[in-house]
Amino acid sequence: MRTLAPRGPLWVATRLHRRALWAGAGFLVLAVAALLYQRLHAASVADAFPATGCSVDIRSIRCEDTVRTYLDAELVFQRWLTYLRMFLLVLPGVVGAFVAGPVIARELESGTYKLAWSQSVTPTRWLAAKLAVPLACTVAGVSVLLGLHRWAVETGPDDHFGDFWYSSYRDLGTGPTALAYAVLGVALGAVIGLLVRRTVVAMSAAALAMGTVVLVLHEWLRPSLWPVLTDTTPIRRAADDWVVQEGVITAAGERITREECFGYGWRVSPCEERPEGAVNFVDYHPASHLWPLQLVETGIVLAVAAVAAFAAFRVLRRLHA
Image (cartoon, rainbow, N blue to C red; front, side, top):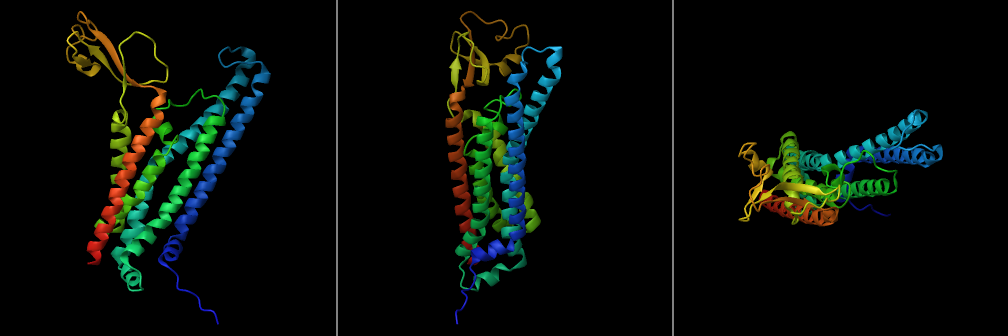
């Protein structure tokens, strides 16, 4: 008679959180289906638009309804892309709260982890199994959404309403940065759950910590992650250049930013009445800096995630001792 092998911690973690996993899978399917529908609908309207003889730039009374229908379909499609980017922005906080609360802190708070550790399961293996399930599901889900976003943007209709490449929302949907933040959410949630050991408090702390990391790194420090280009000529730059700073360089080489110029007063500001030998300057990122900025930010986030994961296992060792 064949005997069944005992279930491992990975199976237990999957079984324990199956409802949340099914809910996440259902949300992913609905999001993909909705974006696919909007993409196909916008493409259908865009394909039929040239045959009408109308133009977005040159409008006539005869074409008002046709142009409005075309732009409305494109606008709705771009809004769905924006919703997806916003979701990728808040997802790390959601993942961190889920890992910190229901996955880690709840077992520590209720004491059920002691039962697992008494079943020939080491604390390290227990924690690894707890993190493997949300990590695998998060990486798979975010990869699908990133691939879908990239396909929709590259093959979709012309963008008359979208953000520039350096927009926070658009930047997260372009490359691996969103994936790195999701991984950080798992690692940071684990260490916070082990430290706090209270479900609700751990969820709040993890969401707050992830929000702070995203705000500081992605919103404030991102412009300085790669050297900017400085332009002191009156040559017109590309429309999608990301202007980081503007101001005046004096004949002595002193850089005075536009913010500093306001302190001089309007009439004596060197930005308005430049001293002899002074030139205007513009620090900016061209569109070619997209991938260097992405890769540097991704590397920093993954490094922080590795530190958080190491800290989680260190805290676990102290807890076991």
